[in-house]
Image 1 (tube, rainbow, N blue to C red):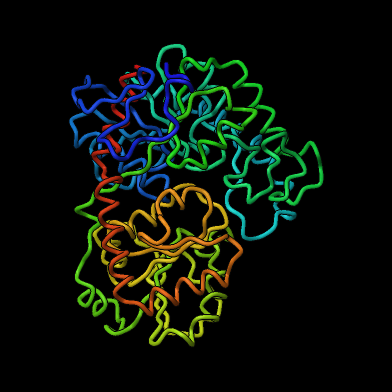
Image 2: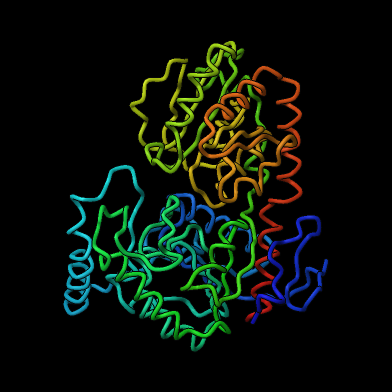
Length: 453
């Protein structure tokens, strides 16, 4: 098993793969043994974490690995995606129903107190209990992803680690916390959860306290020798290392990868014609799974646009995602809605001159990588893993999360300098090709699997 001393904190993007099996060693040899890997994910295509898991699954297949994606709900027609089958005999249905009632009861008391605009709050328990574990296909390595409501922590980790090594790819903070997926600066999970602001609670022993305590108790009994964490960003790896719950486990950073044929620059004028956007507009793009999610910071972008609208001729806003915002936009604006098809996504990105991301907190947003692969420069907040991708002055600019004025200045400066904006877009595509290909990500995971299997 890898240790923190032998696992380098970040992949060396300058080489084809990073090797962590021996101290100080790297290799360019892709000849590693073939393994059967099963990925566990809530679903296969709905949401950023699910798409990231599915892309890794396809990348592993592309380089000759045997990969199966095991999900609660299946959307794709991929024959190597297997859906969990709920046992429908009467005793199983009764047990599942009672477990669901018990889990829901803990959260119901906060439905009225919980403030609006927050993301999901997730329990460590699942109504399925041990039945998920019983259906996981035989494999040499299990790779967990976003497993909310699918995997019951206690049933899973007290049984599976006896026989099969586990890699857990974290897509947010939830495994470290008492229930939130991003803490938005709260910081309580670094000492002890309770009085949770996302529950609207003043009770020091509220649901977040109980979930945090169950996780701490469980993982205190699980040896570091059979559980390896992977994070897509440096920021999230550091949070794992600081965690009282998971800090003893080895962690390394392997960024997401993309199919760079699916995500590639398209003809901008043609795409704008299809979307009803004037060819001469200076288009700023914003993408989020849920635009109304306060963590994604759309309100900060609206404020920035008020400041720069008069300074950028023909400024046009394009957005993509669920829940078209009610905010009044004072410039021409088109909202595309939610899109799951990667080829069409790349067309939407290609319609833009510049991509904006205004997250208050984030991991390694797929949206930035997608924009880069499509040859679009980025302006955004210097939070989480965004600075891993956006190199100031090379493929875009980052500003402090609260610096609306700096965001407006960056937007204005790039949209009014077409040559520099285009140069940064070309740099973004080059960086994506060199550092974020699906094949490179899959090869890094393959070597990791081989070192622990």
